[in-house]
Image (tube, rainbow, N blue to C red; front, top):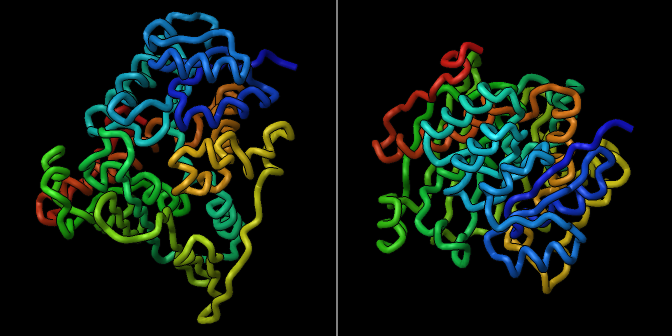
Length: 372
């Protein structure tokens, strides 16, 4: 057995879900955890028998025994913490979104390129069992030629931490954007977006963003494909949904209307509901069970991402495994820094377009900028 990757986990709300995954992965050792709240830090540390505990992110980065950092901190901290981790020589995984500005996405790419360390945005939507199922249809040729893609992420954020209040819908669009671009194997190039409706003035004032819903049409780079993405966060009545639809010439896939239902496969004009298989067999045996369960399964210990998101479609162990294997195999992870930036900037540029009454906005071409 080779040397195990020594990982530190930052942020222990949703982030705690990954503790048993890293502890049971054959190629990793979870050596440290980090959270500002010392009481909760010690509670989690005692529960999972983790000796190294940091309340300071900066102090954690000075620990030379740590090979990689997995960041699950609040959205406003993602960019600076990712950059600091990369500059400290740590492989870096970070929950979505990559950043909240185009320039910060650019800075993360620069830090990754300069450090030579891996950066991976931990996008759950491209490792769910639904995504893996449709990807298998694409790879086998059963879908045929993709003609159009549609994604949606509608969620009521009342009751979440304060930094969410009034967030522009498209600033957190990666769950709806990423499966479409990943299935098309393309990047977003240009976007037209309209805002619709209005949220309460107290919410709109936070980010100067008035819209209840933002809906965008994207042109994909080096492709004849377009895709549509709709996003809402506040004051829009809808059961939680992170959905994607794929229309192709042989078969098409549509997400179900209600979470309790099953998705539909269309063969020509004939449609039928299908049972999506699990893909735990793609994982090391020790972490397979975490596609179907997590530490937040009990009623008294439910994180909001599980109450509203059904555990992200079994994606968590797949994400961790991809991050770890990319390090061991000395290759770029999926998504890497460039892809992560495109998926994130798709939403950021969409919001710019919405604030300009639907004027087209060109996405940055980061690969060309960095000579890739």
